[in-house]
Amino acid sequence: MTAVIHDTSTLKLHTATDGSVWFSDGNRVPIASGTQVEEFVDSLGQRSGKLNVRMIGSHANAKLVTMLHRRCLMSGSLELASPLICGTAVERATAEAALYWMRQCKLPSSLGGWHPLTDLDYPAYAMIRQLQDDSTFNDHVEALLKVHPAWHDLKFIETISPDWVAWLLTFIIDPRWYIDPDRPDRVSKLQSYLGLTPKIMARVVEGDHEAGAASRCRAVLGAWSDNGPPATAVDYESPGNFLWRICKSAGAGIRGLVRASQKFVVYLRHTWLQALYGRTELFMPEMLFKRADEIEAYKAHATTRSRSV
Image (cartoon, rainbow, N blue to C red; front, side):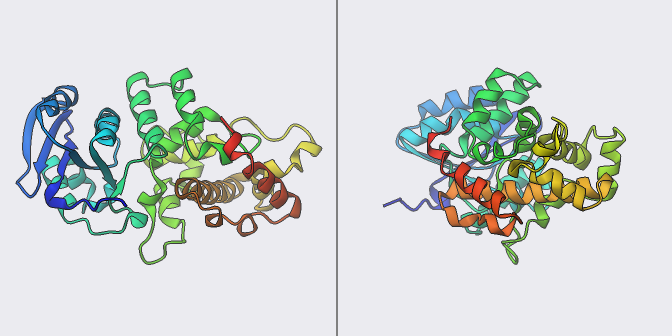
């Protein structure tokens, strides 16, 4: 039986914009440690007993997450919550304010509240840290992508692009971070974050995608389309090229790219959640695929998950 972790028994951590660590021990006020991540983690070796840690699952905290994962797994716990528990982006970037917001988080884990970091969550933060260190897709990032829970189902898409997928998955971090409490089955919150609108897609197609929502939209588009359309008519009809058919049926152009990208995110979100929870009923292929051969091909691909690398 899993032990219940109470807020008063946890060490809450947050990495400030200058790379230093702030902490709140139990219900005490936030304090600036004055040390960078590596030094702060080393100092935790002086603590006795179990180490129960809570953090916001963000890019800023990726190094802390990866450095504390194994230690907390052996003796204690490491729990994460959505960055969106903070009232605003400014408060999320302000370590002291973020720590106060963490004290107030009462959401269930399925809606972005506290959940234990597992080996299925870990690759997302490890990829973030690797990309922060290297700033490029390389063999190390690719190795982490291959064990990421979203990767197996993404391989069903025949023109999938691993390098863009890696960037996209690290933009999202965790699909639970973008669930609307009032409409948990809707994907619009995630699609909005990823900039999947005609206006932003037009900017991306014109080459304006250096920052913000446009950079996220570019990652979505690159993930499924950058390897180019199917080479032949036969390839075009292959079940794994369903996004290209969606693009064409929506009129191609900007409208088609937006529509196919939105469907791609629907597919990614549902299959990723399915992998995290280990429940096959979270993604019913009939909800997305229109053709019998697409449904059967996906089901056949899904059965290979346990044997995949």
